[in-house]
Image (spheres, rainbow, N blue to C red):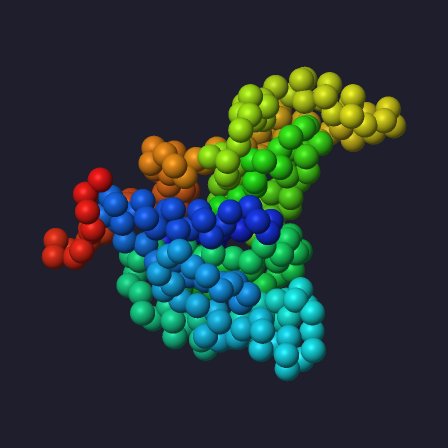
Length: 269
């Protein structure tokens, strides 16, 4: 049984920073993780890249050869990845054992995880290869400045949940960059009546029924919840990782992999 995180979220939400922080944390505690780059436009990495989609297809080459713009070229690259599931992807996955843990750092184009089937088919292929997969959806905490943006973020996350049909962990990223955290607390454990009152105040009377339905889905039914992540704090990273481990049942069928004693861990902290 293999384990995998599919790290998604809007562009600029901190996906690559999350991957590098998680990798560094696991290095510190002696867990082995492998980070996979699925962004054909990525250029700079703060983590060792275990698999790289750019070895299969790159955004720059597609733009040059096909005359496509950045977004069209990226979609072409991802569809090319989908066509290569039984070739390049299978060959790369053969390098990992049954109990390996992979983190897939995905592009930020929202259509990839809301209605285009590329990632859904990619995940289905991983599951056929006996991987337990969890989606990690990142939303920039600096984006959550009022109730309308909070609901917008919830709807985007819910759309990904419906499209991908996987265990789902929602994370408020960049908490270390947030200067005023007082407003965020209201959205981590939201009170439905308070949210509804704020939403009705922001929007016209004709949206009252829609507002009520949205708040019931987000608040009363608990469809979308967020975990705050401050990458400066090891406890914050460990808590997020523990929630993900529960989702993918990591450790239930296999022991946590510990690095060999003769490997270089660097200086003790």
